[in-house]
Image (cartoon, rainbow, N blue to C red):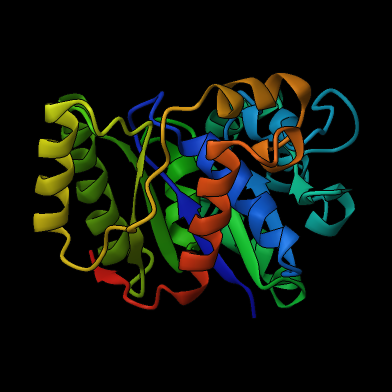
Length: 255
């Protein structure tokens, strides 16, 4: 049965979607079956995987119209995608009166879990009902973090939400790990924040860091993960190494 990994950080612009897309592609490249579920109404992970978010069915149809997840999945060269679009922004309102509204995504993914080694869920940069559904469905949470002060503040709020979800809806929820993104070792503050994170999450911070890299930034505009857009770039190399470390990383952290 596939492990469901939620990619979450309530602060935007920390490389959450970029990491979800590129780790998915790197894992698919290593012949693992992986599904990316785009739970963000902006649909950036969808376009980053080369899927037209205006065509076909989406996660909205799965959550609100009871369309089976398998019917909305799009197969790509970089892994399977359960796409998103702006319709999903209305799901938060429409789910309010649904029975067990926090468990809708979990129920939708259950029939297809055994088809994949991993199911990645890209959350919106907020702690609303969509993120709550992702946390309630997940086995673990992978937290991409930029090495800056505000990212540390956002982490505190995310951990609070995770503890609440664990207590009420998902008692087995754990932290998969922390991935440091947009890292620039020349900046002393970045090194300071990285050291603080590593001190707090002993054994939970990936040794592979994602550097600032122009190829990573350019790739989504071409509808490709960076490994397909510029395989020899520093960014592609970093995500390839992160995938290898992800396979070997077996130390999850209590929330």
